[in-house]
Amino acid sequence: MGRKSIHRERKQKTKKVEQWTQALLPKLTQTALGDLTINDLALLMNKSKSTIYQYFVTKEEIFEYITQVRIDQLKAYKNEISGELSALNYQYESLAKILAEGVKDISPFYLKQLQIHFPDAWNIVEVFLKDLLKDLKQFYIFGIENKIFTSVSPDLLIKMDEYFIMQLITDHTFFNDHQQTLEVAIREYIFIKFEGLIVNE
Image (cartoon, rainbow, N blue to C red):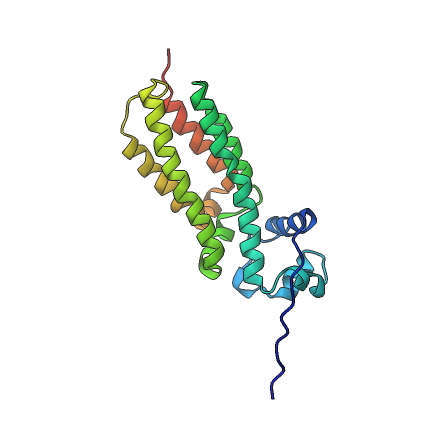
């Protein structure tokens, strides 16, 4: 007879767990995620395998947790945008800073690997990005109606964002060829986008 699996309650994840799992990201920028084992992840986090199993059942769960923590941090953009727009005092640098911080230590290669090997974790990213696109469209409409932005097509603007957000961020070949980080690319994209949109008095 085979050995019966034992169901164990996992410990509540603490701020320390959040810190040592997030510390994985800069170590995985060029790593084939599908080849990693729990042992590999434990070594990278400088933790014992038994410590990892106190909080996580599978490596899939680890990547889902890492992704959710980072996405939760990124959601700060929404309050930033809505607060500044309602005061008619929008500064696009705020959005650039928030999004660039959100992708700090994350490479397009890592995101592509996440998309291929960990679909549940990638789904967390995809849901966030789709919500971001919806918010950006409303953001453009509000800015145009209140004469903060030049009167152009919000649908065209969002189509440009959709390409950049949904495709370019996982195109590691582009970034390898141009030796540019995702963080810098986001800052430059937002700078170009909003410098062209803002109405000059």
